[in-house]
Image 1 (cartoon, helix red, strand yellow):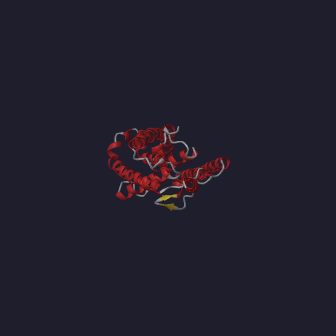
Image 2 (cartoon, helix red, strand yellow):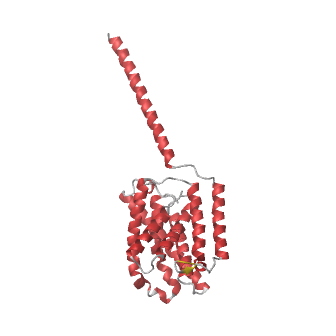
Image 3 (cartoon, one colour):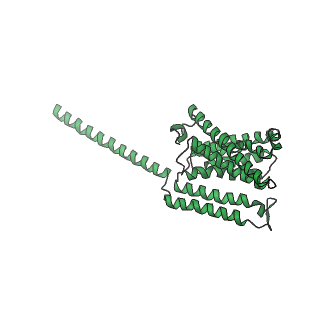
Length: 292
């Protein structure tokens, strides 16, 4: 009797182990499929590099040839919008190419976090716009030096890219923040929106050039500099077209340096601080060390 019971127990144990192994295998399979759904293979590196070069060439051609002055848009002739159009085409092309080369789908938590950052960024923009004139009155005495605070406008773009770490995060956060600022009311009106788009793309294209694989201090500073370059070029073409060539160059250089330090360094420090609190635990930026 004891022998039969032992054999029966052994068969039951084998059956339990087999069923348990089967369930584990099914679970592993589901996990693998879930991972596959999260990302998809992107284009090859040579094709991506070709797309980046093509974007730069098209943008340069628009800049060199110029847009016609016979038509107008948003109160400006198309010729006056040549630089914004060239920047938009080049930066958007590079960003889209980088995103296609390293595709990774957004999760609900990514959208929520990016949206929260955008709302906070919009409120920050509105506060900066409110005090902008008092802040820059003295700086306007030496025109290029007014770009020393340009980096304040680039913080949401770089912060969004570093925190969310998904293609499009930088431009999404910066653009939505700009829309919120415009809705709350400021002295620049609709131009705030297209500034947000192009400045966001300025940070985005740097992360795209890195194929969204590096998010440490150096990439952060470079992303800030990219946003500052886009914003500086916009400023000297839209608001300061009468500046002398040397003054324009000085303005753009100061905008790049300001954005590299304030937006790049500041956003990197903010990301580390948020990660230390555990607020970014659901995101890669809160779970992994920064890669330079």
